[in-house]
Length: 352
Image 1 (cartoon, rainbow, N blue to C red):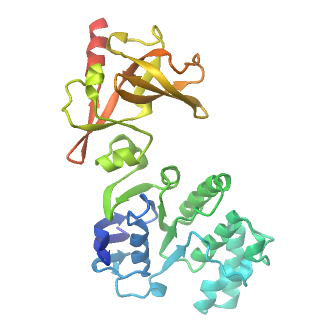
Image 2: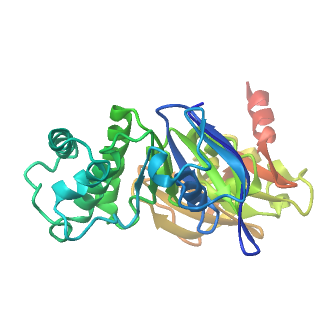
Image 3: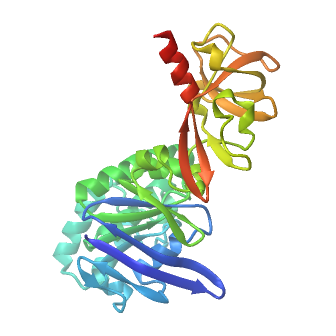
């Protein structure tokens, strides 16, 4: 493995920001550290960079222990969320800064900076100052400055946080393409699920200083391992009164579960197959979600939301509908068990 983090621990006073953090990263991979505020993700990044010192644990980059190596000698490029560009330096000078500090040959600096300006699409803006750039342009300059010395590892701390939504989406695609094109092993911190899913090859989910789950976006979404991951990733309804739903009456009392909108089918009577196993409900809310409707229905004392296509007739608040829950994620001792609607399967089999 190219990056290895072993049993990392860090406390700030009585608060444990990192609790036995361990993970490995393959060379050339782009990894997302995803979690809510205060989950410890930025602390992990700063310890790897050498900007914070771990209380215990080891960090290896390309097989070399770097704990006692100063930040400037770890071969790491760092992109900050507020760009951290030098206001009195031009685009050219900002990108050249790291190379100048290393006292690289002037001819090489010119060649490298020119090459990077072309790469980030800012040719012709070399003499502009940060105040003359847009947010997206500033972040591209920050990226170019970080990779100018050809670091072994690139770290990005919420790199899109200060950029407006439309530019942020464009920049995410650009960043992923750049990192893969250059082949730099990279770790970026974010609290935005959509961002992590779009950009990362693999996601590490953190919570309260610990790692909850590591895997691809699809793997984590489909098979959450802990209650926190099931609640944190994706849209969901949390329900405890399963007895309201025919298919899940057998579930233990006092348990909690997640029901995701894509696993809830809602329609008028006669629209859906297998209505014998559907529950009756009343529409309590309808919201437009761009490509479909999100319909919230009350079934007894429970509420669930489902996705309804724009191609189907509109439902109305107060209308009586039928509801079919296909799957839910049941929490048991912080573990997650996927429960399928087996009653539905039995009824379908009976018709065949």
